[in-house]
Length: 257
Image 1 (tube, rainbow, N blue to C red):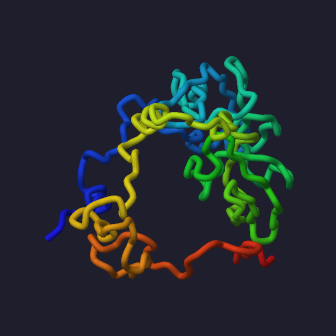
Image 2 (spheres, rainbow, N blue to C red; image 1 turned 120 degrees about the horizontal axis):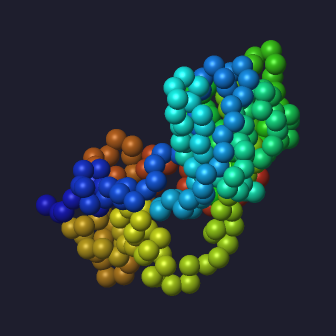
């Protein structure tokens, strides 16, 4: 009997947990309230922080609490052009300025937005990575929906009431600079989780991987595998509908309209 393959250990073992001790916290929009639904609230950018394990900087924004005598601090996505001391406005009546948070129905078509909610009040789901942005393509007033182009190039329809930040996420162009040496990759992934270096299956021994062993590095069996395969066999192209290079123009099911 062979060993458990690494993919099986990743589900259970604490070795592969995310390294969260030094992280600054969850990056979200404000919890939606009466002020945001009807008017706007003003916050001030206190500082722009580096969050270990995240490519994009985060902004610490302070708001006055509407119900208690205190201030609320939120961690939000830093947009390109944001600076400390900047006023950020959140709500239906906020202006269309970089860093502000507005419902999509208040945003004209063609606007570049980021940190977009998927459902009203979920506090941010799409276009949150460094340099990412979504573009508002069109509004359907009858259905109350808005169509977005996501960073992947796919198109998505979301309710028009969801909120988004105006602008592009800061930290863009991060991947343009090459790593150059293994030490940089080591430190990049050390603050994320134990997922580097990745050893190919064919480079392993037969006990460690279904593709391991043999006198030359070859798979020796089909690389496609059933979705119903048992856990230790489920490596390679799982439940593949097609294999090989993608050739020609990519036809997205969402592009038809």
